[in-house]
Image (cartoon, rainbow, N blue to C red; front, side):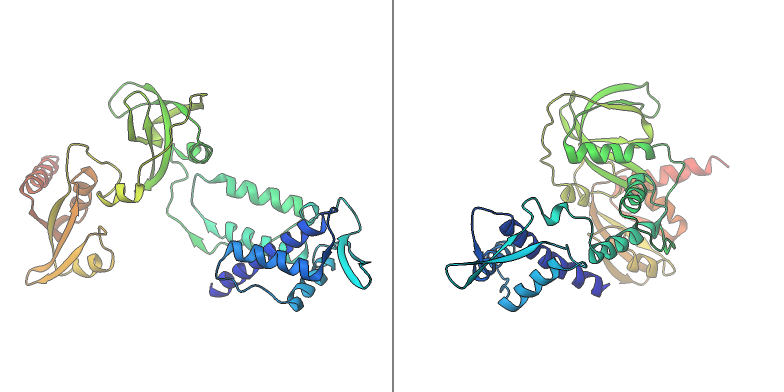
Length: 341
């Protein structure tokens, strides 16, 4: 993994150099000496990273040699003598550009690596564009790759909201307003104009957050499996001002009651459950305390339905110590559950 990261970093640096040389060599209005090309390349590297120390003439000549080669871009780089003995570099074909060239062997191998990475991630539903993109790239550039799967994600291919994930993702990226037909649980279908801002998956379900245009609420939450249809509108998109990392840091799950504030939740886990809670904290604010009865856990969140569900999922291995309203709520739900038997 470390090798992959380093190679990607080197590739970016090299690509900046090749693109700069390409721009200079396409400029028929100026004669570029080797020193001029070196200055242009180093200025580009410095703009990209102020800590970059640049390259020397030897590296520049290697870059030009690579661009000329078949393993590079087969660039028609020539020199002409000006001002006596000085050599100026240029493209002998005026319309040539490395950006118009097919993939060279190095780029093809790197693209194969990306396609292999795509295909080795199996089960993440909703992003069909990854598969589609892989097929297009393989067909366009004649690439094949090892398609052996080595990673599997939790996911439900039959989840009814899957078809909307990529559509909503594109609407967020391209800043489009959507008209959505939506059916809340236990209610009739409604239609709303929605400015999508953020997609989140929780408990194998997908949710989209955004501005409810009618209610003027910028953190409105829609479950994708409750959407029946959506279409793009010509409404002007209102920019997102929400800090989503901060927004979700206050809750467990996806629902955020507007009328409630954060408070400290104290939970006592049995000794058998303690090791799992230590290695897989239930919230980022979690603090653990070893006590005689087991593990005392304190978190600071806004109580919501997902917190209740999480507590109930631990069954007899957890006890709520505070706050009192949460104790009463959990006792009520356990009692109602017992009444089912």
